[in-house]
Image (cartoon, rainbow, N blue to C red; front, top):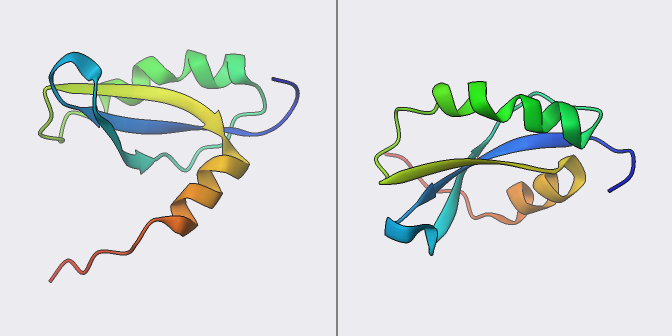
Length: 78
């Protein structure tokens, strides 16, 4: 992928990484996929508070991540 902005998405997966769901998108933006990929290890180290058998970090286009975030329904946390 060419130039653009990338973000790290944190995913929680069931056993075997077959079904994953996006848990959060980190706010930091990266100017290249390589810089984003280099930051995924530290991002995973900070994502220990989720109750999933597997946690993954994935670089995504910031534009696509923003569109997915807007399309996701908002949950009432009361």
